[in-house]
Image (cartoon, rainbow, N blue to C red; front, side, top):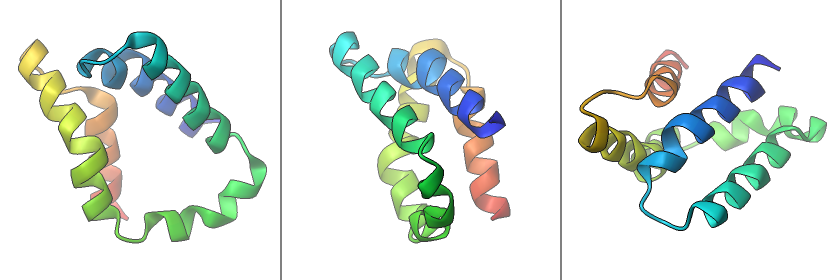
Length: 89
């Protein structure tokens, strides 16, 4: 549940505001992401999802982190925590 809450907060407060795109479409996409993570059958797939995680991070998360930084002159906490988790994994 903590993972879900952190993901929700990061999507809502950091990732969506940092992307220059239609906010309604981004909100719908975020809802789809949250729905996927709330699927109880996903838990056993986290190991396979984590494969190639560095390359996935560079393509999916790092651009949002850099965009947020450019707009706010600050690092967004959720993406930073995700990066630290990636390094610790």
